[in-house]
Image (cartoon, rainbow, N blue to C red; front, side, top):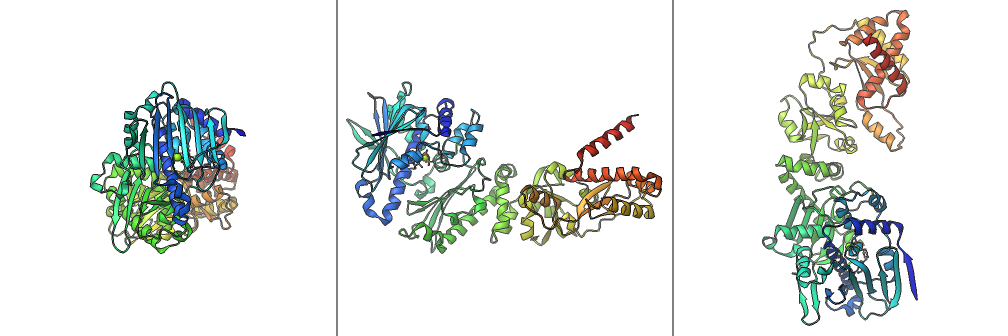
Length: 613
Ligand code: ADP
Ligand code: MG
């Protein structure tokens, strides 16, 4: 009996891209198949920990490559876990990972395709870059029935019952006519050494007349001596576990000694992955116990704010025969995590000494790392220390908090910041005018997390971290400019407060402004306007909207003129109109939406016209 099954639409689309656009680096298909074979052995080895019988038939785990020059085929075999019919349908006919379909649709036919492979589990399908037919014979460990899966990589696949002695999977590639080099043993040896040398199982070349020849080192890379590992070997291993195609930005290989011994091999990628911000993004840090792969789903191993870190930890001191769930809650896990995180943060601190290099990293992963200031009670200060911010001190360069402190006046006791949606808009926020006047530097922050971390880190090295709306700095200075008359100014504030009462809590005069006539702010200590906008965007009801305050600059000619005008009843309509336009203008400067854009646009046009005539 045979079942013909069509590929899911996404798979067809992806296969089409994979087969037709991926001209360079075709040989990586072998890395993908070997990687799957190695995963399959890992899975069975793990099951055998609690059920030794299940792997009895396997004998020693190994991966076999068998080229056949006459047939022009290459078979990749393993004696790992194998697949049953449902596994074949689920894993080799669909794309399981969320978001993949969209990404495939959007991927242009350039470099990004390369990164697509693997990140989405396109891994297996890459076989169709070199083969026009793939035949899989597989038997799942612990089951009796074997299955054959055949496909041309175009419309679908066919599954039939078959026979196979030992559990595991044979993947036979019927190579395309112009892909004959994959039966060339010299070439095969070279590809394996390049891409798969670190695989922890023997990779064997099976040649009819010569017999079996082991062609890789066959030992876990992290367990080897640091001095014997080349940069390229680290890179290949990084690419293997991360499915990335870049060089690692940071490689950290260490051995922790003491009561609890473990080895860590960690990498930070050079580029951010497409799904860094997907809420279901889990870190894929791998846990091994004495070189046996245990899990890449142990959340305790890497905190969420380090979800971009790739790598493994291996400890012989963890109990092998307990469940993943029990491990998850083991205090040893916590210890490994703490040790690993603090080593990594130390390493990042070292890297931060080279600004240009570090900023590349920061621009990719800074937003995520900053979550750690909020989440990680223990390492909060350390993370803040390696965090960088835009600032009024420099238009391009980012600054660390330490550098800020080193620059500020000796009487200054706080680090000031302002939040908003956009750095360029923030730079011109009228609320900064007094700080500029007084020569006080202000950090510019535009990410959602920036609204939260200062709440849990109110102090840094003896300096309070304060939003400028809470600054207790004397904002007055000796001014020579003409100022609006006190009485009329008061009248103007009253008049505007009443007129705009649905939009702002009050209208007041301020000494803080220099060039802007007006500015919008909130009552000290209340939620910032930026945070309010963020909450609104996420459909969060804000039970307590902040009290908005419209501040007037009594030194600005426009305000002086307006306070003169407000004294005469005849001007009422004109003053009303201008007051509304000024409110809109303050919103624009803050990045708030205007309630009636057409009113604003129309008034501005007519003012321009008047100025031209
Ligand atoms: P990924 O390895 O990222 O999951 P692949 O496309 O490489 O994506 O493989 C898809 C799935 O097919 C694997 O997760 C695994 O469940 C199954 N698979 C592939 N090759 C093998 C194999 N040799 N033995 C057992 N299962 C396999
Ligand atoms: Mg794979």
